Figure (cartoon, helix red, strand yellow):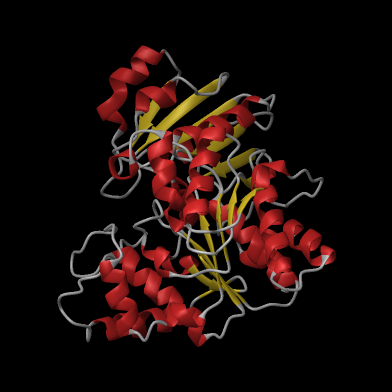
Length: 398
C-alpha cells in the first residue's frame, strides 16, 4: 500500500492550529456542511458506516470520512459508498503546493481538509466524520456537528492520549461542544461520568445509548456490533428530534445493507466459507479480546495469522490468544511493522505452536496450505495486516 505523506511531514500532529489555517486557506468548507462526529476507541468505523447506510436508504447524499484505509487511500473519503476520484486527490494535492509554507500539514490534516472540500464540492446532505485519534486535539474537531457520539473508551495510543481509561476518556470527550448533543456508548460509570461532566460544562445534552435495547441486526458480523447498533439507533433518534426524516424501514434496511451501501469491509469480514476465512482489524487489547472470544466460540481448529506494529505489547496479547490453534506471525509491510523475530522469546515462553514468516501473504499462504476444510483461518492483529491481506487476495475468486 502506498505511504502517503507530504514533504516528509509526520502522519499525525496533535493540535488545531494547523487545521484551522488549512481550512481557512480552502475557504472553510467544513462550515458549509451538516456534519455528524463519531469518536471513541473501537467501533467508530462500524458506527459511522452503519449510520451512513441508514441515511443513504432514506435517500440522502452522504459523505463518509473514515481512517485508516485498508487498500486504497480513496477509501477514506466516500459519497454514498463510492470512493473519491483519483483525479480529485491529484488536483487537491496540487492546490496544497500554493499554500503558505508555515502551515506544513501532516498527512491526516491534509486528508481531513480534502474530505471537507470533497463533500462540499459534491453537495452532500450530511457528512459523517470519524475522529482520527483522541478527540480534543484531533484535526476533525474543527467541525460543529449536529450531534456527536463516543462509542467507547479503552486503552490505545497511551503515548499520546494518557495511561488510564479516565485520561483517555477526557481526551476523547474533547469533541463535546457547546449546546451540541453528545451520545455515549460506554457501559462503565467512570467513563459516562467524565463524558457527562464535559456535557454539563458545555450545556450540552448527554444521552446514554447503553440504556437502549433493540432486536435490530446488521450485516456487519462480530458480536461487538450489538453495542455499536445501540449508538446508531440513538444517533438516529437525535437526528429525528432535529426534524431529519428517517423512517423505520430505512433504519432496518440500512443496518442490513451496510457492506452493499458503503463498501465497508475488514470488521469480522468473512473472506470465504470453504474453508472459513475471517479477518478483523481489531488491534488494541480491548478489541482483540472481543475478537478472540468470538473465535473461541467457533468449534474449529484455527490457523491464525497475526502481525503487529512496534508499539504493541506482545506479552499482553499472548495471554488472550485462542486455544486449539496454530499461529503464523508475520511482519506488516510498513515502517512501523514489527518483525516477529524481535519478540520470538515471548512466543517460546508462551509455549504455542507457531512459525514466523517474512510477510503477510507468505504467512497466509502457509496457513491456507495446511488448513483442512473442517478448520478455519483468521487474519488480524493490525489494520495494516488486514489491508495487506485483502489487497493481495480480495480480487481472487473465493
